[in-house]
Structure formats: C-alpha cells, structure tokens
Image (cartoon, rainbow, N blue to C red; front, side):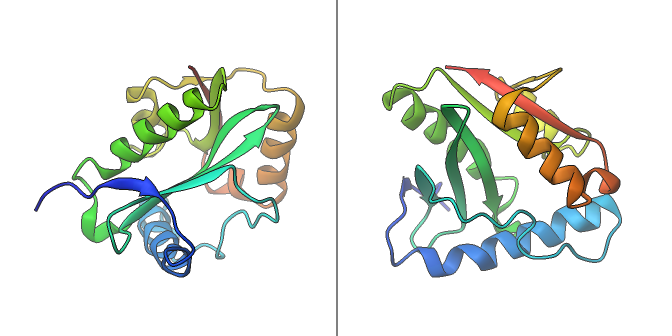
Length: 162
C-alpha cells in the first residue's frame, strides 16, 4: 500500500477525525495500563490554525493551534490499523512545513514523556524538552495536570525551532 497523501482537511473529513482520535487514544490508554480515556482528552473550543489529514478517507490527522504566538501541535492521531507506516512522521513533517510557511519560528507540543510513540517519537522528529515552559504553554500544562493527565504518566512540553 502506498503511503497516504497528506493534505489539508476539508469539511467532509472532519466527521471522521473523532473516531481516529478515539482509536489512537485506546492504544495510548493500553500502553499506560488504563482501559480508556475520556474522549477527547483535551476538549478545545479554539478553532485550529489548520488540520492536516493523511489519506482519503483519512487514516490520521494533525491539528495545529497557536500557543504563545507560535504553532502548537495540539493533536496527532493515526488509526492503529495504520500505525508503524510512517504516517505520523509524515504528518509531523507536513505540519512543521506548513507552520514554517506561515512564518512561525517554532512549534510546541505537550505529550507523555516516556511512551515510545510520544516523547521519544517527537524527539526523533527534532523536538526538544522545554524545561520551564512559560506563558500559555505553562497554562496548557497546568490545565493538563488539572485534568489528571499527569497522574497517568510523566508529561512533557517540547519545542522544535523552525
């Protein structure tokens, strides 16, 4: 099977994204030793800067928001049936390229530090830990802690200079 094409999401793609996220969250929950997460983990009322999808119909997506005036990878989900095929890495690359083209100087994200397809994966994409996040990124981490995410496993903020 050829790698799915990465493209900007259309309104027709959006209804498929919650199911992709829920399936990916089940895989993450299993890795953390939990039965399930509340869906979605971090509901947001903020409109994204952009959403990229892999495939038609989508099998994965990346949602990019703005935090502290920079691009922020809010969500990256690939359906487990398509995991291990480089789709997540392709979505990250396309997200970074799109942020760079929009004039952003960096991209941040928050993730589980020790889950192989979280912190170590993002490090392999060039993201580095942010030791002491400030501003909106610190507020986002505090919100995650308040939701109980830190109780599931160590969390980390990361940044990639564009």
